[in-house]
Length: 219
Image 1 (cartoon, rainbow, N blue to C red):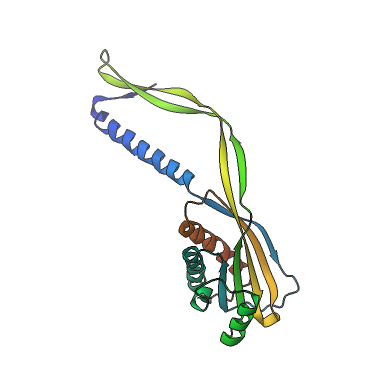
Image 2: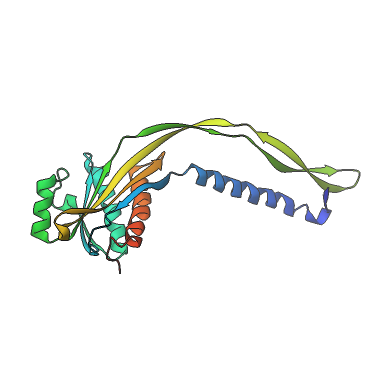
């Protein structure tokens, strides 16, 4: 048993506030969307010609969502020293089809095309097991004129968690190799909160992986 003297009484409530703030931050962090690359493929026979100038196409009918996603990937590519152009600059009304992409590549000289499209959303039910946590409890003793701390075990019961898993496929095509797909990956995002947050999270996940794989000619 730990004893807190009278001189420590004023500091003890502050400690409880700090602990509460830390727990609150941890809970908020656990509620944020999380993304992962679950499948990746790189053409083993593709020549070592990293792309430097990329045309970014997000296949999304909603105009605002499409712009948010394309801007997020363009920004992350630019940060890596790769020149990138969102397709909405040339095709503001709707995402370009294959023929329109070919014409844009030929006219503007892009050496790579970055295409993002959404796959089927999945619903998952996960069981989160219960656990036991130890919580400090402090009581003031009138007999000893001091605070006494002891530890109490609390059982947190298990529960079923329903998750919405949003999946995207991201393909990188090399214009320098006769329109050959050189990399493809599938991502999963758990319970995304908004298009802006999801696009930032995925761009920061995928673009560094492309750089590590040698697909991008980064600075």
